[in-house]
Image (cartoon, rainbow, N blue to C red; front, top):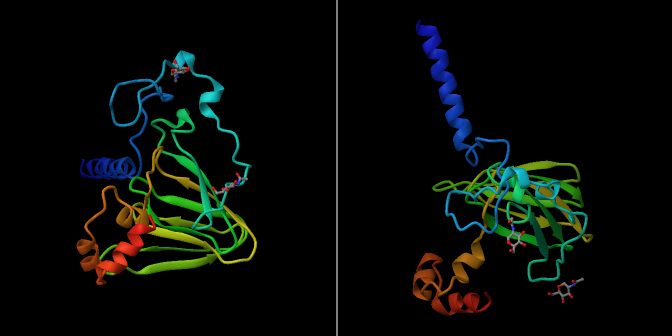
Length: 216
Ligand SMILES: *[C@@H]1O[C@H](CO)[C@@H](O)[C@H](O)[C@H]1NC(C)=O
Ligand SMILES: *[C@@H]1O[C@H](CO)[C@@H](O)[C@H](O)[C@H]1NC(C)=O
């Protein structure tokens, strides 16, 4: 019986890996988020499945360009469980990203999701940085139709490298991927992280830190 035990062990291992790769698997057909529930749990409480409507499983408007008139020249339009309650417990979400000419989607990380992105229009420089101690930058220029993946948790970015606007679509392996924009989190926390801490961390002086903090 050694072989069946080995095979079942392998299956258990495979399912364990699948189970930790994204949000927990659902235990029912669906669990449309009940935005009014006061129950606190991992995810959102389900509304009565008999009351579920097609509108709970749909979102409209992704054909519309996001407003990129801002300091970084990009706009993310998310379609997570917040915008589409039917995503609750399904472990996936979606986003449209618009870029002004030379605009960037600044370095950020999704604490709960890997991201797979494709370029619909234009040309993007994309990259992510591996964790310590290597901190290797993995980067590529993407043309229309190219696909790139940003592994869960790693800091990544995109930049439009053409004079025209650019559009990307991204899918993420969580209903609620979360986003930490590095510059905003480090220099724009409320209240501020002490400037002497950041001066030491960034190996610079406090005046420079305070100047950056003033911009967030
Ligand atoms: C939440 O409550 C509001 C106001 O009572 C109601 O309009 C809405 O349909 C409710 N949403 C859900 C998902 O039950
Ligand atoms: C885009 O955002 C800018 C800055 O917030 C604003 O002034 C402008 O009116 C917005 N444009 C549109 C079309 O909403």
